[in-house]
Amino acid sequence: MLGDVSVGKTSILRLFVRYLKKGDIEKVEGGVKCSVVKADFSGEATVPGGDKEDALNQKETKTIHPNRIVFREDSSNRAHTIFAPGGDRARAVVKMGIITISRIATQIVAVFSLDRDLDRQFEFFNDVRFFPDKINVCINKVDLLEGNRDKKIDEMKTQIQEFFDTRKIAINEFFITCGETVEDFADVEKFNNRVAEMILEITTKQ
Ligand SMILES: Nc1nc2c(ncn2[C@@H]2O[C@H](COP(=O)(O)OP(=O)(O)OP(=O)(O)O)[C@@H](O)[C@H]2O)c(=O)[nH]1
Ligand SMILES: [Mg+2]
Image (cartoon, helix red, strand yellow):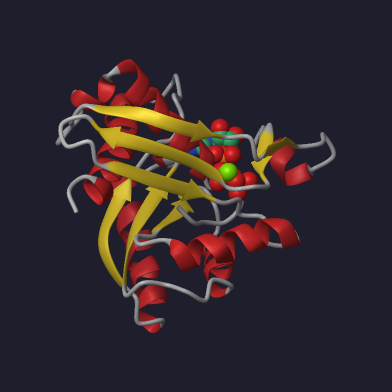
């Protein structure tokens, strides 16, 4: 999972781990029983209060060393590993994680946040040199969208498609998600489920 700082990569992984631990993973569309083998979020660092943008996001931690989870499909015993490096590529150690993981990954999910300018988020991907021919795209934080949701999502999809077209990278599928258990969002369950459905689709269905 790759994407600019604070788009929600770590939240998405944590939510997925909760679905596995609680057994909710079997209840989503295409759900199958899976177990967590390892969940490593030790590379999170607390954000000092002085960081203005992160303070606005009420962000408590940022990823320095990549998050990693390993899970297993109970029926086949097949194991899958997901990495989510940090997005703050201005820090050399974070950037190293991004480059290393983009090289070893068999599949990439490019994560975007709905509430922020896309051009800045595209800049992140200009630094990533190793890409498969086909990637998946996750548009996260759908709860923060105001007004005509479908129209805004379609516009974003078009912009993202154009960006990757120019780089000759095809998009398998777009997933619209909510990576947080937001309380005042009516469709929270549906879009939380989309996180689990996305990861299952990309790992167990391939
Ligand atoms: N409203 C809302 N907030 C979200 C959602 N997903 C994540 N967040 C919040 O966004 C902030 C950043 O989330 P992270 O998961 O740390 O983002 P990240 O992409 O891992 O960040 P880095 O690893 O530092 O690049 C946190 O405050 C999350 O609670 C979402 O779907 N909706
Ligand atoms: Mg993170």
